[in-house]
Length: 265
Ligand SMILES: [Zn+2]
Image (cartoon, rainbow, N blue to C red; front, side):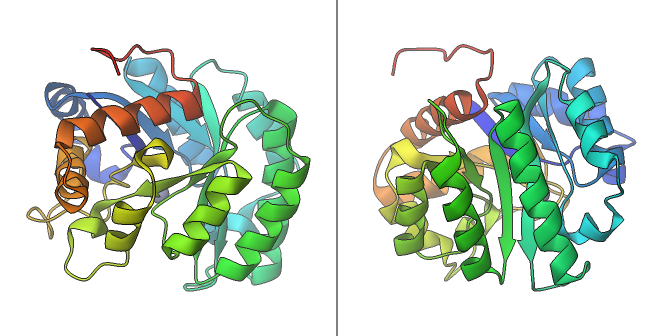
């Protein structure tokens, strides 16, 4: 059993065969997929998908790329949307100083506002961070110091820091997520896959992006998630089933998914 903690199957690339994509995921043992919003439209689409497919759950939020498009009143709309029982997280939110598709000031403001929203709603956060490690760490350190929860505060999606930074986030109450790049040669994620305890890891496809080897070059989809579990198992010298079950258990705890693990852990 696997849980895909981060997917975008609302993307246009799945318009023609979304039912088949979900059916293939089910067949491949993916018990749950968290579909992640990037703006208001994709957040609403995430909720609709979650209502349509039993194994899909929704995260809602404004990606840093779209921070400048976040309008006055959009936070209220997200809060309203969060009332649907299928909504399990606020995300993806954070900073992207690599592509800078929104001005940095707008990104920081949207990030902080959505962290406050998550705290108000007692929802975990899904963090996107690219070329902004210091800034994200300082904002999350400040926020985590105030956030009170009896479960993980959120997840660093497709984590791009080193193991030392990963351990700092774990101490603050976050989980670390590994995506397809762990299957690429000389990926920084190899260190993360080796050094971060299994109890603190979740896995994701981030589909349609970051397709794992040997499917690289094709459209990604949740049924490929087992390739990531297999690679982590190989790196750690443990059975891939153990990686699948542990990361699924962690994702269930993080998002409070109303599903049961098959078999005892
Ligand atoms: Zn994403």
